[in-house]
Amino acid sequence: MPESQPPSRAVDDGAFDPQLEAVRDAILAEDPLGEKFGFALRRTFDMLLDGQHTGRFRWEDLHKTEKTHAGTLVEINLQRAFEFADGEKMDYSIAGIEVDCKYSQDLGRWMIPPEAMGHLCLGVWASDRAGTWSAGLFRVVEDVLTKKEGNRDGKRTLTKAARENAVHWLFKDAALQDNILLRLPQEDIDAIFASRYGTQRLHELFRRTQGRIVSRSVVATVAQQEDYMKRIRYNGGSRSVLQWDGIVILGQYGSHQAVAAKLGLPVPGAGESLSVRLAPWTPEHGNAPWVELEGCEWVVARDTDPKVVAPLLPEL
Image (cartoon, rainbow, N blue to C red; front, side, top):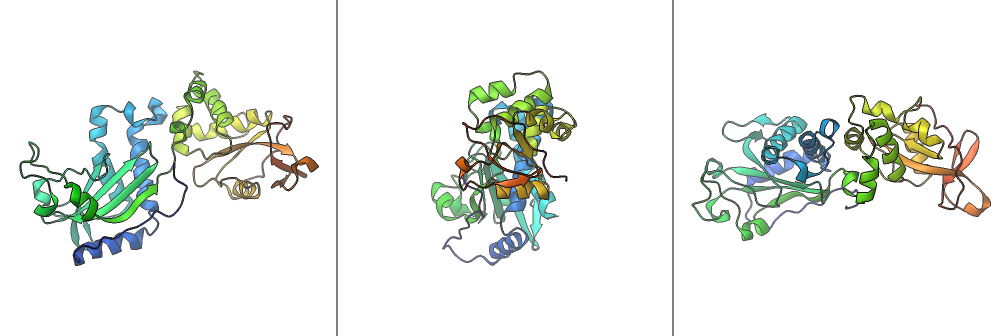
């Protein structure tokens, strides 16, 4: 999984296309860091998997018809995120220019219909397994397409040369919000999903993902309950139960983000959580980052630190 950072951009040295440049500029003015793109693609995977109701978290678990529907959902979610106007012939009108939207699980293998000839195309690729996504613009012309026959619908793909040279990338290999369930060893997955009770599964999730960001969609997938975020809270939720193991669960709140930053941990963003076991600071911890909670100094616990009851987190 790549580190979280602004996605890279690349522009080709091909012939100047003023319409392509206008569309490119309009998209990047609206989304210079690719945040809207990334959110729309993360939302697409989460909608398809529907983990809250199915417990699924792998692309391979989807039915063939659901995978086929992915392109339509990408098109819809991007339009919602950017508020693109409807095109008259193509999917969108961006900066007053007709643009078709195509998605593929294989980078550059977009299926281009005959009616897109001459128009601009927004090609999108994303992989939940790889944790990355890319998006680029290209003009659909005869020279960039494979042989005329195509498939039975007349759809064709870009030639190898076109995939390498004709796509003007807006974002390339950008980081997708992580699905941590895809990064855990199978023994951890088995332990997390062993219980029939969603609350118990959440407790185990936060025991086994300490120091790592857990997204809202992962919590929903593990809990499989309508009020899944409430299951994290104090008053009987995972924060109360894991407190006895010395574990705190930090959330998106400003006071929690400050604790994470002081301890040198990843800082949870909107809808994200992070668990960590704490220990009271001792001279043996040296210059380890610390934070004051309930009048005492706390550090991230080492394996050798004895288990103590964790302090309460600051009020929200």
